[in-house]
Length: 176
Image (cartoon, rainbow, N blue to C red):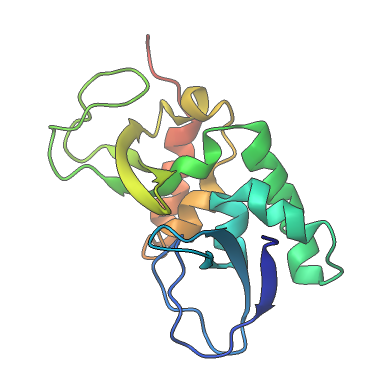
């Protein structure tokens, strides 16, 4: 069951990482999995960057053989996802709309209006929401402060000013 990297033959496939359509002709990554509904196999399609961020092990199986500059440029991103096992869980950032969610790192409530990082787990061939961490707790939780590129990728509606503010928050540390 080798994974594949190929241009999209149509614009019908939706990326499993960001839930956006993959444009016709765009280079995409296909992770081959056993078919959950019968015999054979199925392919989970991803944008290249989404695969490097969310499925680094599978992505690297194909990427290390590629000479395409776009693919080679994403290898360090995937390597970081393997070195820091929780990094593939990053699913964007937002200000907490309520004060009801608990941080998965410090277990404290995340106050309304506070920056929080959304998390997902990959299970049963899909990404399932799995809570949040305070932005200030993120460096301890992910074991690195280098998450802003992932956050920006999965939160495309954040402005440059919001990303800068989030970067400042990531540099802060939560009191234990």
